[in-house]
Image (cartoon, rainbow, N blue to C red):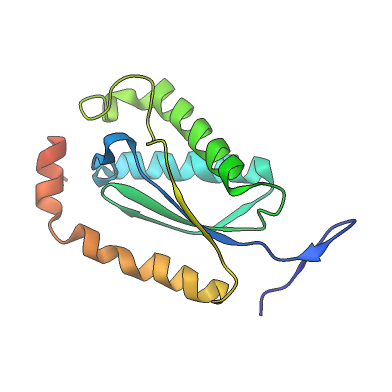
Length: 151
């Protein structure tokens, strides 16, 4: 069992699985640098919010996060904060990496998926996130061709 988080007026655990997709469900995460930059900005924002990203895996067109200790935020607010910051930072300094796939002032799609973790253990969700993404990379050559680069 995970250790409970204690604060001045509460004791508990609030962990969740969050899935984010880029605008138009484009395969922008097939590019390794986009994945690396997105990870860095997500972790940076999570730290400033006081939450911990303990697992993070990509499919070519989506991202799975396991976030711990998000008790201060509604799922919609957490998604808004993470998506807003990463979108701003990626478009500000790195738009050349994906400008052929995305246009306008957006990086993420408007929606997201979330599930709080209660009926299953946090370790189970982490394992799912870390091990289940291989199916999305069955044909990486096709994804690289879509992006117009070779790795």
